[in-house]
Figure 1 (tube, each protein chain N blue to C red):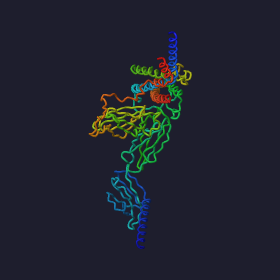
Figure 2 (cartoon, each protein chain N blue to C red):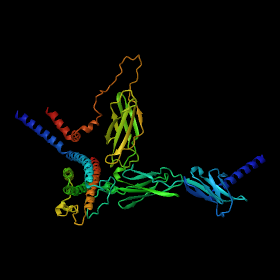
Figure 3 (cartoon, rainbow over the protein chains, first blue to last red):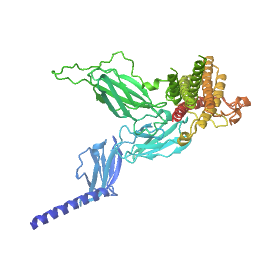
Figure 4 (cartoon, helix red, strand yellow):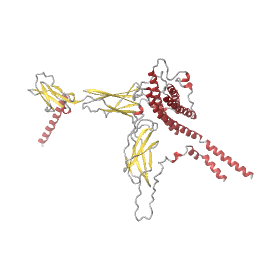
Amino acid sequence: MANALTTTCYVVLAAVVVVYAQRKSQLGARVQYEHRDTDVTMQCGTLASEASVTWKVNGTDVKAERREEGPQLILFNVDVSHNGLYSCFQNPNGERRDQINLRIGTPPKRPVVTCRSNTYPKGFYCSWHLTPPPDIPTEFEVNVEHNLRVLEVERDTVHKNRCKVKFPELFSSVPYRVNVTAINALGSAYTVISFEESSIVKPDPPEKVVVTPIPNRVQRLEVTWNNPSTWPDVDNFPLKYFLRYRPLIRDEWQHVELTETTRHTITDAYAGKEYIIQLAAKDMEIGTWSEWSVAVYATPWWYEPKPITSTTEAEVIIENCSTTPPSAKPEHRLAAGVPALFSSPHLLLASLLLFIMW
Amino acid sequence: MSRGKAVCCAQLTLLLAAVVGCVQVPDLSLTLTSERTTIERTYELTKYLEHQLKDIKDTYLSYLGPPFSDPDFSPPRPNSSSLSVPSAATRVELWRGLENGARLAQNQRAYRVLLCAMRELARSTLCPYLQSSLLHFCSGLNGLLGSITGLMRSLGYTPPQLGDVPLPLPGDGQPLLTERPASNEFSRKVEGFWVLRELQSWLWRSAKDFNRLKKRLKA
């Protein structure tokens, strides 16, 4: 028992020592960044040109095409497969003299930058990426300018390739200029894009789209949705919506454009067929349509089959196929002054007087 | 018989008085309703003008030629001494907090200046087709201005008088697009470019302004 305990202790201790040694060895290594498809020379410390060394990569022999000249190791036509921790040991004593962490990559190409505002009028965000990826660590510098002023840029804490900027003003005629510079050990490249406030506004799609069948109405579906939660001020910056729907059996969509509402009743659905419904949103005045919302599937109401013993006929209300498009709520159609008139107590008095007269 | 007639007349008078009362008491809400309709119509007019302006702007920029006709060309805005059209740009909090009268007044002032600038632009255009398009657009813009002024009056605001506008008007003998002898052709083209750009921004801003007004009057 004591022996087992001692053995375990020794094993644990050995593991700790190995891990520590590995980390220490890596920390001692210097990084060398090199361009792919070139020939790379690695120098073993400060040894003289007559010195003789042995090279290892990641603890094993170097198998790639190479030439060894004194303290130098030359690799040809490198690519990412040459990445590794190269160590050189002086002959004949085998003392390790240097460690190089070789990383092959490319200087950055011009970043592809896009900016968008889904939180209008709060601000916009920009995101970028490099094509092709440079394979070595690359940093980015972002500058945003408007009306000869430099704006404050908030870098995203999670995404290295994103930043946020607040709109300094609204209804601006002056374009914004965004400069993104990519920098790594092998070079740098920048892209400048220019855009107007109105062109980058694109909301997120509507949320919580719910489609419910309407009892006893075999051609109707009621659709309700919420504004995208990222849109901060729908009262002053109202959205308009685009609803599209089709039965799964057909390919053509039907479209309805809606304003100042977050509900709509489809009245021309095919009875008994499953439908797919989606919504998109856009600022009333500017910008572009959002992406389509998550698709919702629904089937219009169909009556429950009654048991055969029942003597009553099921009531089925079939809509006329040529009904006009869904009307707005009836009360909106009335002349605006009429409801006020009907609710006046004076008219009631007048009616009472008329009644008395007769 | 005459007593019956008298009773009948009295009842009719009472009824008429009641009806007249009905019409008079909800007067305020009726008036606001007609204002809301005017606002809606003015909103539609700004959308229509915005749409028209897009076409005219494209034609005008082709007329100006390169580099103005290049898609992403954006010259720096001339300073306010050479170009006095107002900018629609404003800070969010300021815009939100604008009181109805002030909001309308800002629009009214802007379109008075912009209308004059557009008329001058039309006058100095050498292409007859483009000139007639611009003049036609100006008549629409004039309609918008009239609509805003009328709306201000019916809501009980005093539209700013000529003297209130701190910017020079043609009536004062000073043109909006300056005709300094030293000013070159390119500067004048830049000024024309910016008149169209500021007008575009104002039409967009007005749509938002009228929407806000509509909501505030509904409350």
